[in-house]
Length: 98
Image (cartoon, rainbow, N blue to C red; front, side, top):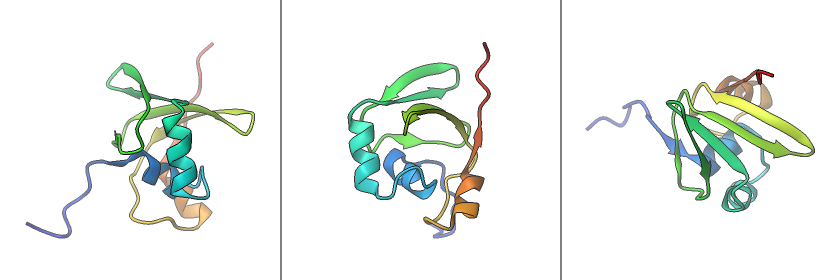
């Protein structure tokens, strides 16, 4: 078993914290437990209601934060909570079709 095996999934609260949407994992976990995040994976949409729910590369997330609707695609899982420039590489914005 290798320590360098690529990660296939990470906890939702950890990813939201690493991507710098929240200042702490606790804030991310509380937001998730309120059921305020929609996840789309392989065309199936659901609500994330547990911080330990796994996120994978390719997942789409939609949530409202600070009066803005945020729609992003998970591009990478990340290894740490890095600087904002590094955090922005973890996701790409999704364009909502009208």
